[in-house]
Length: 184
Image 1 (spheres, one colour):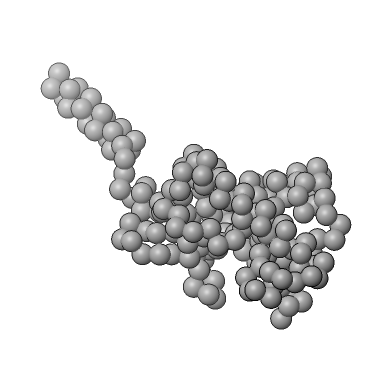
Image 2 (cartoon, rainbow, N blue to C red):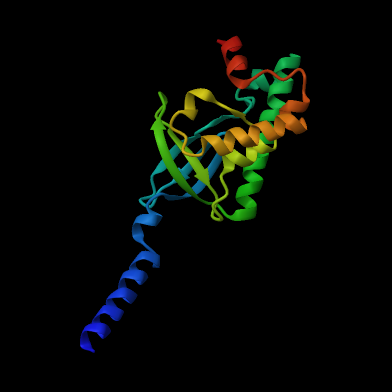
């Protein structure tokens, strides 16, 4: 009888331990400080340290960074920045709707020191999937190899292409990596 009681209590404690709030599960949760563009955030970790994050799996169109870019009359610049601004606004909108807490799955660090990460909202929505599904970001092969959700993001992009959403509706659109290489 005592053995069964002990076993029952042990089962309850183990189950509670598995499903209770685990400090480790919060270790990769961050507060968003700033949305830099459609695929880059600055987050704050539990110690108050700012961390720059580059979205894994995708590449969003560029935004204008300099005054000259903002004043550019070139059609290719205007087109790129139009879509870049839409991607940035969509990320901001998602954060406003779901709260400014995100969970990161860091997959790498880039040459600028940014953490390449899958970024999930508080309801577990993968921001990269939303952007790809809406045609506001493209699958970025160099960051795809370590992307745990690669298949989901690729499927989302295919859906946007097939439905001609976002950038896929724009025959003048230049992929962000091609746009950046032109500027170099």
